[in-house]
Length: 164
Image (tube, rainbow, N blue to C red):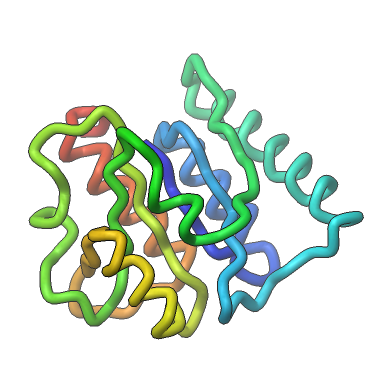
């Protein structure tokens, strides 16, 4: 199970990495989007990724899990939603169907994609829809990016018997 996340500002990224790692998410992919608040230059990106990998290691130790969540960066939305054998679902507050109804019955790998504060830009949503990637909502509330990532991951992990 992987989570794609537009990095939130401040220390909220570290919080998300910590909680996703404790839940047992396999992979976290940081995705720059059109409306991303937090971006890094090439010189700083490596340091940010190393810091978040250290947070993921600490979370694995805390949760006593036998593996450490992989943390990496992605180049584009298309790169993360068009992967063979990965069932991607984009979380969006205006989606018609809830996440539970948007997940496949069985999947080797599920990836939820969480946009930035303010949501994905219309052209990013159109790209997902043109790639036949379903849009799903988490509920009536609009959650912060990092909260949506944790809630979405927990629901997916529970659905496929890896949590709860």
